[in-house]
Image (cartoon, rainbow, N blue to C red; front, side):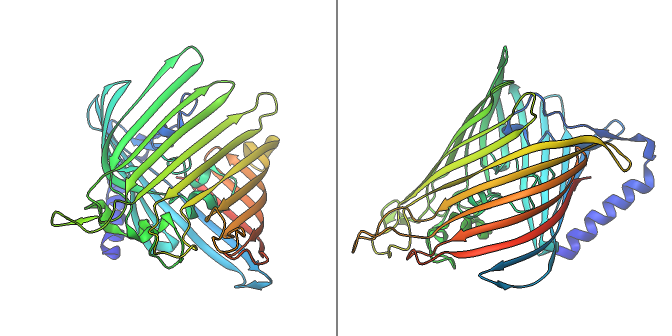
Length: 406
């Protein structure tokens, strides 16, 4: 299947290039000045082909890293972390289609992260159907590698929340402007989590385990859709703040009309914020989420029913000038702070605090030769405790990466 997919994409690309005058190819710039995180799927640089109503684009990430935990390391590692292809089409003045296809770890995994039809009824009322990215927090929708100064995605977004998390579904979205304010909303009913969030190889409550179930694109384990809703507002000086909520029943509680279990819910509440400070140009982005899962009483306490965590990135431009042949190159210094607690609470037997938490600091230096490309070098310092709160394991190491749109 993978070989067929690779061959199909290659033949389409070669045929297009062979038959098209390259002067007709036109780069469509990303317009993010008047956008929210919910617009991230469209605020990307695309390549248009004359008057053909189809545009293409994508990005790639390649990394080197040398990481050790308590002095034990696997040595030097090289990774083609991911390659992503976007295809967008304006079918008519009111109907659009966009898809995002991703190859991860050199092609080991192939995922459709987004493939939706948008029907624009009114700026405040638009219909979307297909495979959608559930708008919980900000990172799940705004995850493109070239937008970030760090080679790794936030731990809270990928190992507590399940970014990138996509499901088949339908929903509504809209946006309005008033003076210096912009307000947008999204609401979707989609595929859901399943029992794997409490029955997985991690041996803990782990929402990302649901991503391994491809059947979520075809059927819902509980038969009840997952609700995801978000509202966000942006002020040109105060920045953007978003509030999102996700709720669903993850277990199969009935079979052939007979109730076989209680309904067990998963709920997520998240806040996100981003802004660029005037004069200094400092960019700040943050996300924090709370997770509550109805875990059966028969499970041990290592399966937490409450989790929380998040991250904050601070990026400061320090050099803006010509570097080599890059006329408008920018050098940034940055730092990411992260914290996650996968099991909030205390053991019933002795009232001691349950562990299973992590914090990390990751300073970084990045070079942006243009808005579409980033060279980045990071250093990770991380402490993690097991469920019994034994002395923390320490993870340290360097990583270097390049990510670019194409």
